[in-house]
Image (spheres, rainbow, N blue to C red):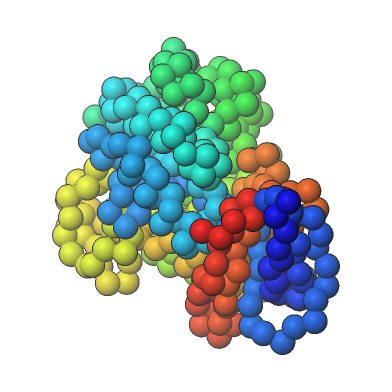
Length: 379
């Protein structure tokens, strides 16, 4: 029987703790006297990952080795659970990506643990300008339960979240069907009116995908689909807090409106994470420009094409917002998304020991990963 411990300051309480681990499971959490500057939290959960460090889940063809390498890279950044995100594409291309991820999970217990399911962001989104963002408009199509069934058949039921626009006439029965099967439905890249948003939530939609982005620039002041999603308590909301997708004031106001308990931070990171500034050809947005501050936009436009900064940057940015704490930010990447993944993201006896130990600079918000544990094993 293997047994060891790890310690640090708990961001949720500010108290120093020691977590004892036996055979990959947390066996005790107790107070510990310490003067060091280490923090300890459950491993971070990212519900929206398109790729990172050159590894692209939306490439024309992907292999299981790419999925394994991506998982390892994210683990080094404190992310112990991530949801591969496949954007709007042809059905053949979507199925090919699903099959590669399915095979990667089959090959490696670590990859299987780190990847609980796949997120389909599209193809059932809005085709209007701004709302579809960097998604290829030519592959946008209405919800089709038969297509969903084909995804699940080919991937062995791997699709666990679908982001769609509820403006489609077939959206409500589609949402009801997916929700009844345990697949989370998210609202995003939409031009739906407020009434349609509330109908989608009543039908079983659970979350708003990167709220504040993927919408028309010409929204009326009120009512509009942003207010409706912020106000509907049946919907959680994810936010990209990389400093590019939402201005600080907007992010703070939206987090306050939705509340810490219903807010989730995602990275929406792409293969351009850690790449040098420059012009690139990518599946998300085509020809894009990556700037030194981490902004990715379709060349010659202001249309964002994913993110370049990992989840820890969003945690750092939220931790510096007036009225928010490191504990609030950590909750948005652990317990909150974890409620969608079997209750992961909590420090409790009996939970799997997915943990991240890190340093945090209270002034700059900068985070340095010290070590990441998956089921008690250092990665």
